[in-house]
Image (cartoon, rainbow, N blue to C red; front, side, top):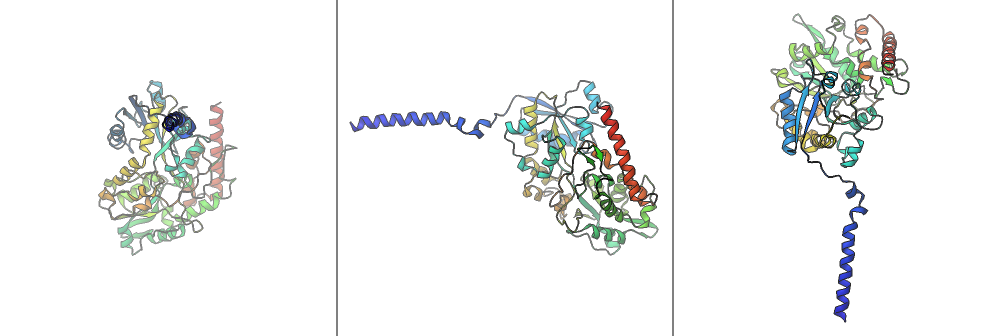
Length: 440
């Protein structure tokens, strides 16, 4: 009798356990939400606008080959802009399929939005349970602002926000090197000491890109009001003191002697890296290659901070990889983005010094340059601020608006800052009105 009861109980238990096994996925939302990986072979066409940043060979070795090695069913066809027939409109007219557009946040409107290629990848993020927490939160916020709450792509790399400095010029004039906690006041003081004549040569303490200083401003001041679609240069009271702080850097009279075309990012970059008559260069857009630094006794210093916000750097300026609305391989394209934003891929390229990572994991950044002799003994942690400033209102007009204020004329004593801000407001508003009218 006991044996018969035991057999019945065992059978019932087996049925119960079997039933639990069958129903477990339905009771587990995460298991139910997990989508299978699409392993159907696909060639992904990736477009990038600037050949000077990523030529064919460099892109292939950095991005294409590691992706195919990890996922053999994926291959990449890379198209780089810069020559006739390679702009987005020209490629679309020619019938060229594009799966991914790689672009900095600043030129995203020209390379994605104006062509109507934007696609909200939020469903793909949910479908494949992608963890956005692995990316620096300020870069996620930038993407969401650009897409009005959605996301058109994921950031894959970010340029440095740092000061390159020529130690030989500091040594020549007996000036201490920049510190790891340098404020804007400290930088202004250094610039005054380093801007001088010596043996018939004019030396300058500091150079940078004016429009990126405005575009990535540490106070997170929007350039264009998202609601009214008007420039903020006169309506936001923060612009004048922020611009005044920058103009103090150019207060030494030697800067006023520069001609209009010399007071520009390309000229000042060349004067630092090539002619080596500038002691410091505040970089916003790219890591400098070894050949530009050859023979220079150089190092890095952190982006200057304001006294009341000692850890806050500029806003981030990432390069995003955007999946296009016309792509026929959206699942596979997202798989590529997942790989390129993984800590594994990010850390490998950080070690090689190929690009500054977008990862929120501090260990990834700490690995920067470990396998690249160019960065041996350099202050590589200065390449990224401790914390990026929050994103201001992000609009498609920001990059153009940042180029309008004529700060050169203030430095040369031709105009005052109030006039420049007023004229900039009028010019940007006119441009916005014309573009809005053309889009209707």
